[in-house]
Amino acid sequence: MGEGDASPSPEGQARNDERTPLHLRTLTCERGPLNRADGSARWVQGGTSILASVYGPHSTAARKEDPERMIIEVLFKQQTRSAGSELERQYEQTIRGTVEGVLQAAQNPRTAVSITLQVMSDDGSVLACALNAACAALVDAAVPLTSTFVAASVALEPDGGLLLDPTKEEEQVAQAIGCFAFTACIVEAGAKNPKIADGVLTCFSRGLMKTKQYLSMMDLARKGCNRIGAFAHLSLQKAFESRE
Image (cartoon, rainbow, N blue to C red; front, side, top):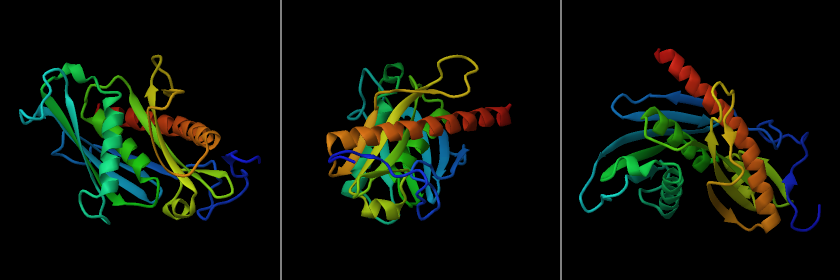
């Protein structure tokens, strides 16, 4: 591997949880667990669990409202950090920007959609899990979107290897971490899986990486998102069937 290169670690190399570097943890999505919210979802990736609730579109304070578009309010809460920490604010900005990228904001001007994300447990890839939970809750609330979105995290190891959907232990020793979100659209009726966009919708990264490493991380995240998108689509189909 040349200097600045990055590639997935060898397929046969097992991680502490017995996954290979290219494998996601087990995914679970519970839609509508909160009765009082307009939309809600619990999204689980391995040991990481996020409970998302959505309220709105609803009226908001005059000083906040936009006469031409709906606005997004995001509250991210982690149990292990004090409210309003710098990391929470960064996560809130990232989630807000992601939703704004797919929101049909002009349909409901002078209103707001409020998204609350509660971290129930954190074993790594928490921002990706939160983004997936937020999308599931927005769909459950029937908020108008141009498309759905999915997210995945990738860790860059000190030796240049890549790990998809890293655990907290893997994140702590990583050289860099990237969380990437992509739009996911159903391109034709009856399609089994959504089409994941080639271009990234959102990226949140920390640590040191070269351009080639960043691009390799993004490519692996998109491949992971293909699988996450297929799971989310199947989960939504089952939810619709159960409510008929």
